[in-house]
Image (cartoon, rainbow over all chains, first blue to last red; front, side, top):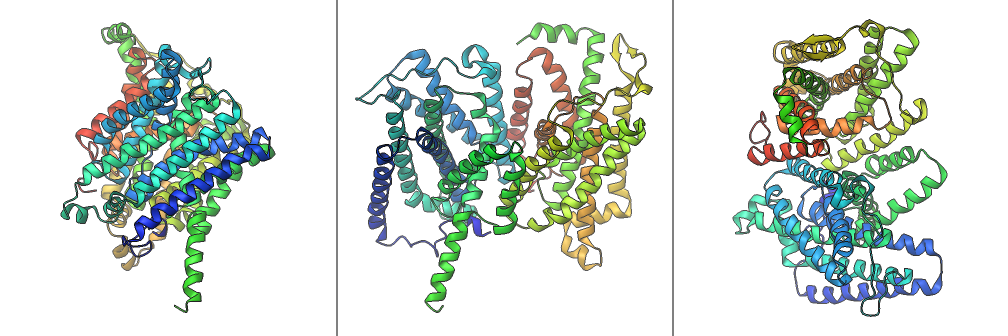
Length: 339
Length: 300
C-alpha cells in the first residue's frame, strides 16, 4: 500500500512550527518555477514546445486535483473528468453566447462548477470505494450523453465550434500565443500553489486522517461527509480550471473532454507519477504527454507500447516514478545515517 | 425526445413484441458478460476492467473459425474455448501478481491490457469493421408473434444465454466445485488449508468468466459488426449491470441485464439521442436509493 501513504504523519514533517516556513518555501518555489516558465518564450521560439507546456498546464491542473481526491482523501473518483469537460464547455458557451470579458467568464465557470460539484458530490461521497468510483463514472457519462444529445446548445458530437472569442483584458491578449502561454503557466502555478496550501493545511491533514481511518476521524468529532464534500468541490474547481485552459488552447470544446477516458487518463497519470508526493501527478502528466507524442510519431500501434509501459510501472516498479524516487532517496538517506 | 413514438409503440402489440425481443437479446448478451464480471469480482475481489476484451476476442475467434470451417457450432466453440484459455493465461501470468495490491494498481494492469488487446486485434484482423454474416441455417423466414417480427437466431441466442444462466446458477449452488468456489470467495485461506489449490480455483473462475464473455461475443458476431474497441461499450454497460444488480450476485446480474436491455430498446424510441443517458440515470437512481445494488449484500 506504499502508493497511498501520502503524507503519513511519521513521514512528512509533523505540524510543528515548520508550517510557516514551509508556506514561504512553497511560495518561493512557485515564484521561481513561474519565472523559469515565463522566460522560456524569450529563449526559444519553438511553438511546439510552448504548446506542450500549455497542454501540460491543462492536464497537470486536472491530474493534481484528482490526486487531492485519490491520494489525500482516498476517494477513487472515476468521473473526475466530468469537471474538466464542464469547465471547457461552460467557459466556451459563456464566451460565445454572452460575450463577457474573460475574467468574468472564468469566475462564472468556477461558480457553475462549484454548484454542479456540490450536487453530484452530495450524492456520491456517501458511497464507499468501488461504488463511489462507479457512481462518479455514471455521472460523467450522464454529462457526456447530455452534451451529445443537447446538440442545439452544445453542438452535439461536433463539439463547440466556431472558436471561442478571446477579447483582450488588462492588456493581456489571449489570441496572442505567448500571452496565452504565460497565462496558462500562471494558472498552473497558482493552481498548484493553492492545492499545495489545501494539502498542507489542517484541513489537508483531516483528509489524510479520513483516508486512513474514517471511523476514528468521525469519533474525533470530524464531520466526514462535509469534509469529503468540501474536497470534492475544491478538486472539481481545479479540474474545471484545467478544462478552461484546454478550451482556450484549442479555442473550442469537444465531447471527448467530458468522456470517461479523460478520467482514466487522470488516474493513469497519477499512477505514473505517483500519488505519495504532491508533484507526482505533475511528473506523470509530463511523462504521459511525452510518451503519447513520441509513440504516436513512431507507430500507429501506440496502444501496445503504452500498455507495456503501464505494465512496467504496475508490475515492475509497483508504484509511480516519483514514489519510487522518493522511496529510494529515503532508503539511501537512512542507510547513510547508519539506521 | 420523441414520446409519441414511444407511446405509439406501447399501444401496438407488433411493436411491443419486436422491441421486447430486441431488448431481451441486448439483455442476454449483457448478462453473459456481466455475470463473468460479477463472478470474478465475487471470488477474486478484482474488478476486471479488461473484461470487454474477452467479448471482443470471442467475436473475432468465432468469425475466423466460421470462415475457416463454415460450421456455426465450431465458431461458437472457438469463441468460448479460445477466450477461456486466454482468461486462464491472463490470470495466471499477470493478474495473480496484483492480488492484494491497491485497487488502482489492479485497474491499471487491466487498463494496460485494454490498450494492448485492442491493438493486437487491429494488428491481426485490421482496423476496419468486419462482419461474420448470418449462418445459412438461420437465414430463414422470421417468426411472426402477435404481429411482431422475431428472427429465429434471436430465439437461439436467448435460449443459449438462459441455459448458461441456469447451468451456472445450479452449478454454483449445488455441485461440489461450485461449493468450493463459493468457499474460496468467502475464506480463501481456509480453503487453501483444507488442501485445495486456490490458485487453480482463481484461474478456473477467471477462465470461466472469460469464456462467458467470449461466448457472448461469439453469439453477437452474426448480428453485430466487429471492430477493435467493440468490447468497451459492452464493458461499461456490464459494469452498470453489475452495479445495478449488486456486485457478486448472479440473479442481480440477470435482472440488471434484462432491465438495461429493455431500457435500451424502448429508450431508443422515446429518447433516441439520450438512450445511453437513460442507462446512467437509472444506475444513479438505483445506487442512490440502494447503494449496494438491487441484489447486493449489505456491508459488502
